[in-house]
Image (tube, rainbow, N blue to C red):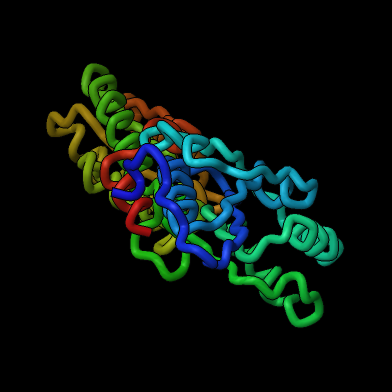
Length: 296
């Protein structure tokens, strides 16, 4: 009821009004805007002042902080990307006094960080120095939003479901291309050191093999996989699909694996690589991510 009202309810007389700031950090994740919309409207409805920090901790350093009204977040529920902007900036000890000054100047009573690993690290930096810098002694909440799904304390972070849908949608089209030409595709997906996107997309798209950082890649693995592909294609197989997480191995890269399959195929099949890239971060958040953001 609260987030679909046209205006906030009237705060109770004498209620303490807090000034609460919201910012993003890390890579963009579909569903960030949904989370901001809910946080803003719930906060205002409770009688508090909600501030938006633009461009993450970089914006906080520069004082790029503006009050958000009830209608400032109108239509954000289904919007992809991050309207407040985000950055992967790593805080140094020299940045902390200036951040403390901005927090004090804008009278910020609490901070909500909606973002990924870089945001968690920055929030921890502020937490570590709160004994030495009084202005940092405010509540700081980290809300997990990352397509990589690699954040502590959360089963599924905001954005991971949308990224998974994007991967499956694109890989299904790649498979149609491969069937027509007796081809093996090595598809690289995001995820950093977390194999969530690679493993789940491999299961959903019917991949023969999934390489991800948790297991790594060995020469014996590659020899076995090449042998299996040669056997299957010689028996009439027309499509090969391998999913590789971006940080699965520093040496056996996507290009290397693709070249190996091409060389060892001996004309039985050819191999191509497809690095999906930042399409995984785009698009409107799925219903699951919208609900997850709202619940969080």
